[in-house]
Image 1 (cartoon, rainbow, N blue to C red):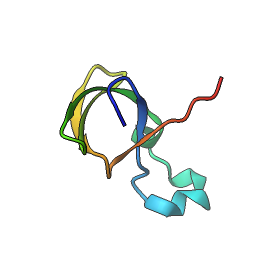
Image 2: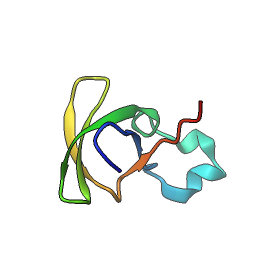
Image 3: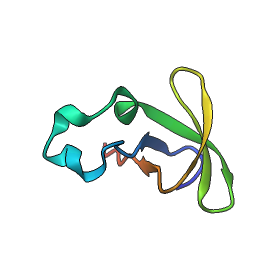
Image 4: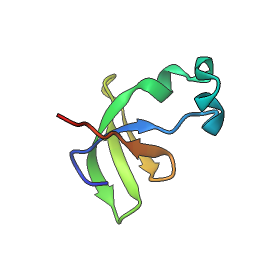
Length: 67
């Protein structure tokens, strides 16, 4: 991942949501943008609410947008 990538938080309930989509939380569906990186595994994400939060790459995933 790099600065400018769109990301989502990984689902709170993990792999269970594949079979039980009702288990997604509102935070799981929110889309943010990476605005800073510390090393190669920590990223600062700007969320639509205006909040800035740091996440390890274990907790966010890049969204693949195909045009």
